[in-house]
Length: 410
Image (cartoon, rainbow, N blue to C red):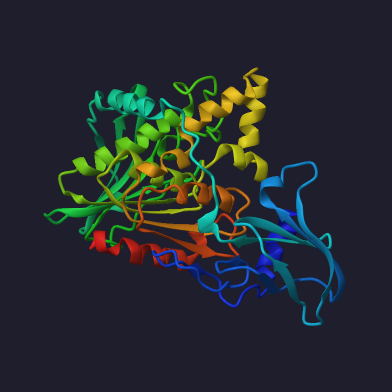
């Protein structure tokens, strides 16, 4: 089914335009095909890779996709035009995301007023105290970074190093940093990596007037050593869960970035996709020195609803917790300490978030569970309606992100 789905996305001329940028004011605009931002009633007009003629049409609520019998909002017979065009009156739909199902072969997502999707914080009463204590423990650990020169990725413009330092609990974290050779103070672009992503090295000539820092949290990136699973480590308590240490590593990366001799601490920005998108939000939530962030397809937002939309990763967590005999409700309470939406109100810097409307890994609802709880009013989002999870392959987003961050990086 997934192969068919992505084949469909690649073959169809789905929309009149492939992206949408919402202004920071949040003013509604006319819908652009699969992303409805204006007022109801809505009409879906698109082309499909399906034979003309009669067809079944179902509109399914995303929060029921993991149910044995998903909730069907609309169920009707339609006619596909000779040129494969559909025109279907959807009427008034609640803000959220829905899956279109046509016959047994065509499936794709649509969105309605994502800026109005509700997923309130479920932070526990001691949430702030827990993270205050965690950061207090972290601050007591000397940074003491160790640099290893990487001459093959250095030139007369920038010098590349692998760096490592000690983080919470004595774990090693660090990453890859490229620093201008010339004297001066430079902005720092902190870049957080996806779940299990392979590290890469910066072109030393690409941005000679900025410091680039690719972060590796504990046991990932340059420290991975063949590991491929972290989400279900230490589920028995909030003190032992993997992401307590990983979020501390995110904060420690900001400490390191600000500590560099050539860094301008007034120009620290962060970006990342997937897990890196989650870490980007966390960096700004835990450290006000971050001046702007550009997260994409963020991970780890709204665990409870995540489990209602897609199988991975939450059901992997549930399987492990069940095998360990952990209480399901206590598990979700523990996870709430690491739900990125519960950090969102702490974020007060400008935010530009990208999401893929067809994302089967970090579904849009989970992205907006974070976005709609942000403390800052300086926020906007960027959508590629035909994109799944691989936002890093979208050159349009790369250009948008660069333009957004440029005031702090120049």
